[in-house]
Length: 345
Ligand code: TXA
Ligand code: MG
Image 1 (spheres, protein in one colour):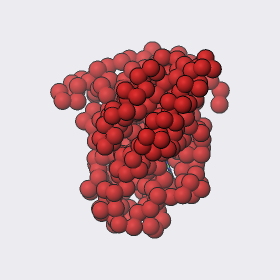
Image 2 (cartoon, protein in one colour):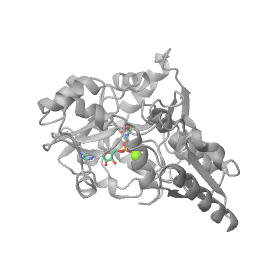
Image 3 (cartoon, helix red, strand yellow):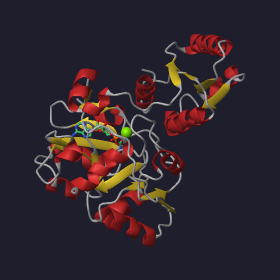
């Protein structure tokens, strides 16, 4: 796609979710209604929003991000009752998930109805829907009086933004308003669950864990990659990537640290700047390199919260190579490992 040449004057507005100032939020809601682009915080990552029912506005999202048109967007609403107006079918088990997980980091893919423009869904007959768990996001949707289509607020293929400064660095001059509410709570994107087929299938691992989802709908499965790519075409492409080359070390325990030390010294001797992503417990082992620790190995919530931000910092520090430890394949660790694997491809 051609690069986006138009330069917009971007207004950056700080909003404290604990004490919302409705004046700027009303202004941002109006901007959405007028077909403008507003980047906003959610509990997962920052989103780049436009009126989901206005195809010219949605087109601007793709242009601002350099996003290919075959990667469909998530439609954000602020109330479970709004689902029925936008989809053909809201399966009973999905309604149950909605009641328990929304607002929250779960996106459900359902059969869409005609109200949703094709550009939102890349021509698919399904639409991805979610209610974000963030007061500023919910307030924005309320003030816009529209469902808001929003991908993550980064240039396509970069890591998703977990702080407003990440959005500013990627999108300043390309969007009308950026709402700044500090760091996001969860730090990885929502779980995308296809509820149009049985059993329900996870197309993208994310903030709502497999374990928690299965407590409500026990037969949920993780789609194998071929199905995920067919159902969620955007998943095919290189994603979530820092600029540096990322190497994910899959060995466990002591072997993992030894392998990382070996690789790090090899690359350093070749003249490359090496950054390392590790858990807190191991960080001292890599003290001679630039180390970013995500959190205690068992505290996967903290690790997820810090992942993207640390990858961006290592890029800013101009690392050529990032070597990462692996994390437990449970809870939010699954989403962390999914993102590290994709970034290392
Ligand atoms: O946490 C999140 O989900 C964030 C915040 C802003 O809500 N949004 C986000 O959007 O990560 P995005 O566009 O970066 O990723 C959405 C993914 C797409 O890559 C696509 O694969 C999948 O959701 N998706 C969207 N619509 C779909 C559909 N109709 N069928 C299957 N997959 C879909
Ligand atoms: Mg994205």
